[in-house]
Length: 97
Image 1 (cartoon, rainbow, N blue to C red):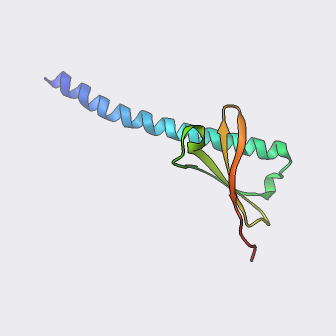
Image 2 (cartoon, rainbow, N blue to C red):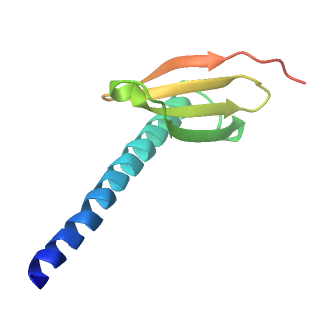
Image 3 (cartoon, one colour):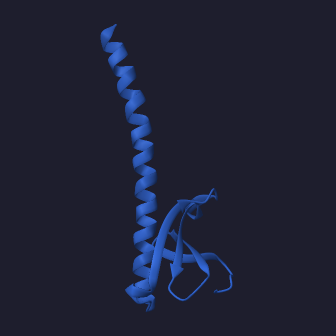
């Protein structure tokens, strides 16, 4: 009986941990790919204000996106990693103050 309870508790701990680890890995992987893409595209490191990975509630590889904010640009750009390729999904258009 104790062995069964121990197995159930182990499963209840491992499954959520594995799911959390997978999501964290996918978000970090997307963030790193977008960062590398921006640098290769010619964006200076000092011009990157923030890279914020998030879950976008879209299907497939578009589910893990990265919001990019650049210095002196009021827009926010949303990128995702599709296989080995980084793609721009959309951007917001805003006015600089």
